[in-house]
Structure formats: C-alpha cells, structure tokens
Figure 1 (cartoon, rainbow, N blue to C red):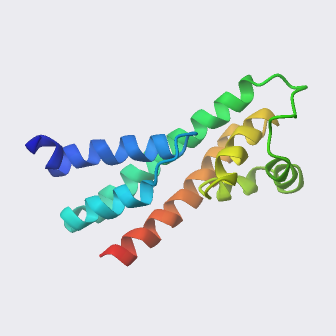
Figure 2 (figure 1 turned 180 degrees about the horizontal axis):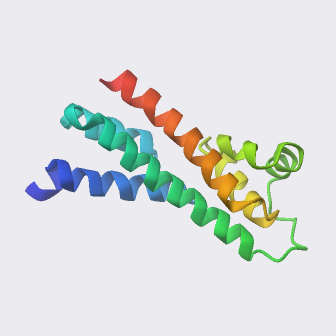
Length: 139
C-alpha cells in the first residue's frame, strides 16, 4: 500500500485513471490529478505530462475502435460528433476531452478515417490544456 502512495506509484495510478477516463469508462481523471497534486505538488509538470499521455492514449484507443466500426454503420454514432467532425475535421478532436461528447468525437474521428496524426495532435493539445488548468487551480 505504501508504494501506491509514493510519487511513482501515484503516477502509475494517475496514468491508469487518465487512460480509462478517455475510454467509455466514466471516471473523472481530473479528480485523480487533483488528488495526486495534493500529495505531490512538487511533481506538477510530471503529473500533467503523465495525465496527458494516459488520456491521449485512451482517446486514441477510442479512435482505433472507431476505425474498426464498419463504414456503413451510423446508427450508434453520436450525430453531433459526426457533424462537428464533418464540418471541422481533425481540429474538432481538440474537444475530445469533454464529458459525454468527447468519447463520441474520438470514435467518430476513427470511423470517418480522420488523419490519425492530426487527431493525435489536436487531442493531446486539448487534454494538455485541461490538465494545465486543473494543475493551476490545484497548486
């Protein structure tokens, strides 16, 4: 138990929580980052980087799952997410961190075959901005 409370163990938990939160698991990764920073404020930059990497990896996992959905399937995809992506393309994935619609944006981006490198970049920027704000408010 002591190792989980260490800065290193906490970072592993933060990465896992951030990854899961970006998939269909309803988990507040901001709360995990907040808790970690309350215990280890001296590691703020590292914690933001770990949370961003974990959450972006989870978002890209959802993107990959969207790539696996047959091209003719639209019934189960969020029409708002599809509309945003059709209108704005990969820059719309900067909002993939938003609750509810974010997971749908990631899946829809994969389904629409949005350029994965651009989607990765925009997702990472949006998630990084969110975690920087959480860290700034916490510290």
